Amino acid sequence: MSCLFELTVICDNHAAEGLLPEHGLAFVLRADKNNILFDTGSGETLIHNATRLGIDLADITYLVLSHGHFDHTGGIAQVLHLNEHCPLIAHPFVLSERYSRHPDLPVRRISMPFSVQAALQQLSPIRLRCQSVSSMLSNNVGVTGKIPRTSLFEDTGGPFYIDEAGQFNDAIPDDQALWINTPQGLVIILGCCHAGVVNTIEYIRHLAGESRVAGIIGGLHLLHVSPERIEQTLIYLKKLKPDFIYAGHCTGDDVIVTMHENLRDSAVSQLYAGMHIGTVNRLLCS
Image 1 (tube, rainbow, N blue to C red):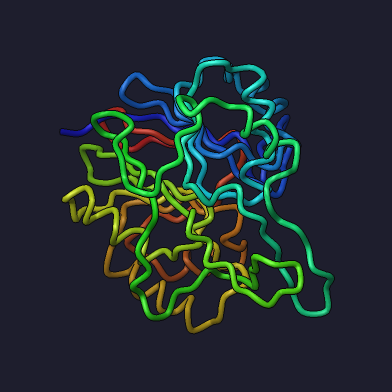
Image 2 (cartoon, rainbow, N blue to C red):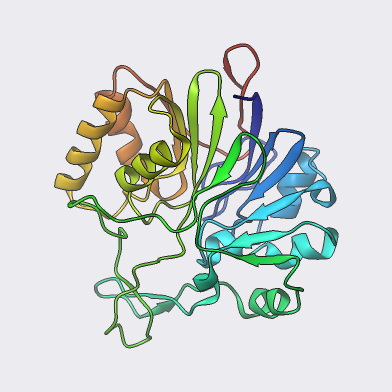
């Protein structure tokens, strides 16, 4: 069984004219008569861009979080204010404290904002669905839950810690992704892909029982990784041969250019807020 879908990018580091860019990511996925909001960006542009795009956040049927970093969770309180019914689906560790510590820079808290944590803690267990296992949101749309880490060359993609002193690494176990069963194969939707591109895609192929990958959309978190990891990721994607890759946010603009130059069997494009991606009888993008 497979479905048609439409995905609209609300928040991204790049934006179409009339929309605002931000360091964050948010998508609305329309499939199987559901409106699924995947992440909420940092909270800076969600309402403005959604309004400009004609998206009514009160009509969202599910809010799914890819993980607990601020640039994916900052708009949650705004959504909950406008929408009093949609369930919020996340890994149990999504509320964990998180920090990043880049060389020559001070430690930075990158958890979801305190105001968002407070809003989540007010939700009933019926609306706040914390789960670590995979599940289907509809006949053709699934959420991975915790993703096994089996690839030898992939890690979280950055200096992430669970303590302010930077002594204990954060494996970001709450990282998860969505997938859609389409007539052309799987379409995989990534938030930040801290679990790794290969780990995520292979787990989804296993869960869905489908080897064909029609497309990949989202953040691949290759901005701060080694050249060796980029090379290994390109080798994998060359073999996979997805029809399209729409990459943005934490992927890295230079990495996207490299992907475009090397993945000749895939149409590689830069994501931006305002982009529409979908299937009708064939893949369409505007």
